[in-house]
Length: 171
Image (cartoon, rainbow, N blue to C red; front, side):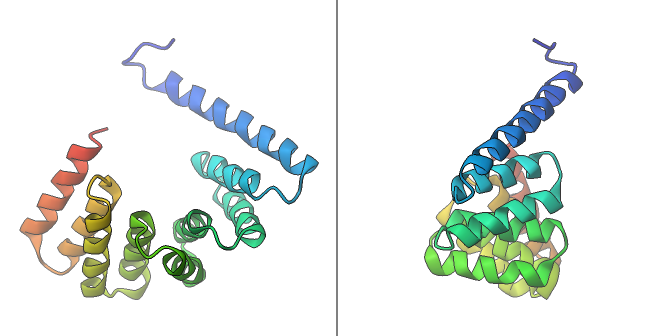
């Protein structure tokens, strides 16, 4: 085991683990090309390795094979945002919210698109407030709400939301 203060070795171990996961999921997919779960997990592993184009490709295939899965739709939207493909991210996010209007993570990612692409910060605040209401322990929802509140000039509330995000996930 790496010393707690080294920082680099655990990350290296994580990278190795995700690379192994990628290879394992590829083998599953080779054996069963209709395994939507394997494509989804492959996309998530690529995302952890910051191989975003590969992640998007795998997540698109997961969605194609199982379009009624909220989580798949949301993750696809999130990776497309990460790739700055904002317009392309909107349909899967809308689909995710149609499938499950109470999905906090989908509302959080939708809030991000409202801020980053639409620049509709007032609507983003409303969307993020919904995300926080649905997932009060979701640090990402609080963080996105903090960004949106800051964008509309509500600094004290923005700081409060950022503090809540840090308290929920201090590392």
